[in-house]
Amino acid sequence: MDTNIKKECFLWGVATSAFQLEGSPYADWASWDSILDLKPEVTNHFQLYKEDLNLLKELGVNSYRFSLEWSRIQPKQNYWDEKALDHYQEIIDILLANSIEPMVTIHHFTHPLWFIKKYPWHKDTSIDKFVEYTEKLTSKVRGIKYWITFNEPYVLILGGYLEGCMPPAIKDLSLALKALKNILISHAKAYDIIHSKVPNAMVSVAHNMAALAPWKQWNPFDRLLAKIAKYFYNHSLLDAFLTGKLTVKIPFKKAQEIEVPIKDKIDFFGVNYYTRIHIRFNPFRKLGVELRHRDIDGHGLTDMGWEIHPQGLERVIRYASKLKKPLIITENGIATHDNQKKIKFMKHHIDVLERCIKKGYDVRGYFYWSLIDNYEWLQGLDARFGLYRVDFDTLKRKPTSAASYYSYIIKSRNFQLKKN
Image (tube, rainbow, N blue to C red; front, side, top):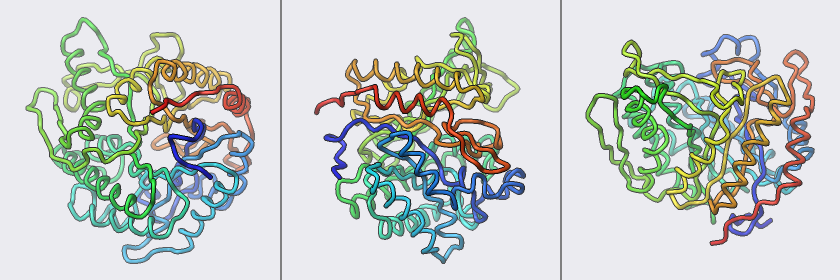
């Protein structure tokens, strides 16, 4: 199968992560949320993977983004579970046999428990452990061209090192910046390892980007914070890939510049887009920043309380295009029990995507989040992102009208890739 991104058709896919579908008793998150005590296997995808992969054929997608669960592959520091590697290889083989392009995420938020206890990201030894993991994957896993090293590294830092709502549950700005630097160094080393082992590899990160705006346009503090937040959250990583320097602007503090060896170490850029966020100055919040959602355009809010703002997708595509690399929308989706709302969400965002492609933006793929309902970080099992509904009592999968609509979209939209 020809998997050259410059020759192939537009990538229509869905995205998932291993832990959110299958759990893992060896992961840091397994003991983090009490709901996982009641449902440790989540959707039991680890056993039902063949059934779920058949759903991909029903949808008619030509690509599938999924992650490899590090804690299953290396449940103990000095032990590799070859059966777990064989399991993920079987998934890859099934996809390729059905002409579905695999896109693998190496790190999607979760860690082996031993790693987060001994080698958290603010320690330099974390880099060595991630390098070992990447070397193991590239020596054992075959058939992967598209690699995502880290999913949403900024979300990991914000949740794990500033808010303390994710492992390792630290609230320390200096350690947060150290951890972010080590993650980006790890990406650079993983990039080199993958390219040394995989001919024609396409390597990226998946960067969560948001449309950011001041809560009150007339308030100078809101405008200032929105400007700072927009640069840090959306632009600073882009600039680091362009210059090798990560500039961090902290509200009411001197900007910091951190050398990171990631200049040009990216082959495409993965964009995760969900919502618009309004920034409000609040002196009683950490760093004086409060995040708010409001339904300005009348599209409504998701079950997560996020604003539905399709126009923001064009904005972040425009931001990301300054990298002058192919772009892939690696996640875009909505949590809702209302399938008509899900259909409208898809239609409006894909309309925006089509407009961007016609304007000449080099977008090569779109991945809806997610294939089936799953565990949503900090939200439990009721954030219904899936095209297929999961009954968490019986674990039965049921197609929805949104799945049928996405199949229709894939068949009816003929996006032409930008010629180089």
